[in-house]
Length: 546
Image (tube, rainbow, N blue to C red; front, side, top):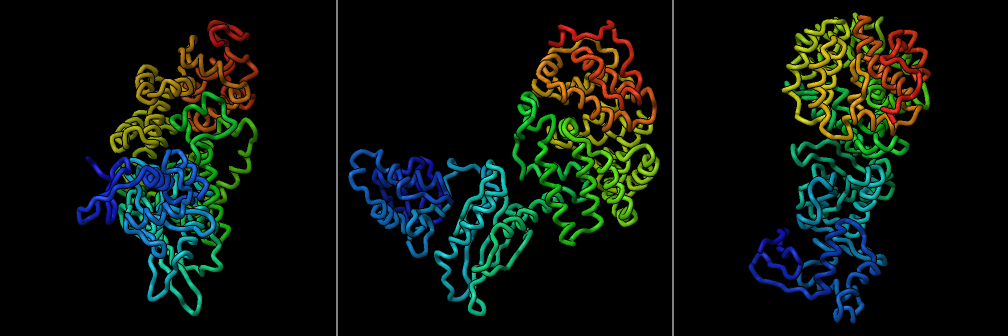
């Protein structure tokens, strides 16, 4: 029978018995077995005596003795544990008990635990004891408060469980009559120390301590994927992927069918907010560099790409954001040119700032492309900018060369495929665009928004996924979707024909479903074809859309 391995003892999967390293077997009573299951299934979390009593009370004859402390003492004796220096069960005096040892594999998968706190060590004759555990638990609680519920934090005082991707080791020592702790954040995969801090145990602000470790972890995730190798993705993609660790999957207030996508079509807006908080904190604290300012500009631009269809329905910060983008980028642009990856990211932001900056953006991207070793980033960025300039053959060639460097199904893979669909639609290659669109939309739910966004100009009868999507879409989001498509795509293309191809199909479906006034005046003034006669001509809502 397979057993779950621990440092000095192996437990059977059903916790009915355990085998020590010397081969000797130890059997557990039903009450002891139930206590082990309860404690290990809540590893790192305080279990009150009442909670443990409820677990034991379901065990029939064993429940006649309701002294939980007695059960714990007997259990520690069987597994060779110590109340003073616990390896498995730690006491919280007056409160209950906490499992601090490794957990069975089936009770917590590696993906469920983002950060493990441990090991805990002391220097010299200092015996941190219960204070060390209180420090670890306080840090764990503040980490949990700043992470989404699906990213768990566990306490591993002996540090023997390395299944989590990150750990924070705690080292205690007494100096000048004060107990201090060095907390060290480390990647379990690379063994690299990401951040180390030294704090006075009595005056530690655990909220700030947790925030500093999570900020360092976020920066590590951005930098780790930006190593400059051939498969390195653009900075905007890396920032979205890094912040996804810290953002909830579901955002309140979204249309029902959009919320169900869970990030397949549109990343959570919480990702943008997380990045914005991190970067503005660095700038306010005086720790900003030209790269920090570039990252904030990229984050503002990325917000429009991923979430503009939503927030533009409630606010229109485009003028102020445009001014901030110019301030952030133009002042530090010379300092960004030495690093080709920074130059490529700056070119992306410049192109988004509008036609007046696109010639400079393309020149920067062409020059950076010649020096960059981050081929996926260089190919996708230059391809996108050549498409804006009307060189669709050159754009598609570069984008198709970038796609094999993407991890299938990743955010970057969807980004590159979306750019391919956009350029095919702009170029009038509608049949090829439709074929690419099939690979972009795997989920039946995501087919609706993607097919609507990339609708062909002559499309009259919507597909079933588009009809379902439009039937569920609130009117305010429909109007915003047209403005969003114009602002992040159509207005950036140089030729009138490309602009028309990119938005007329979407506009036609929206007009048939909601009426002509669904098209914002800004869009109809810039691209009059969005208000051209429909075929068949109709200004009323069509039954095909309801």
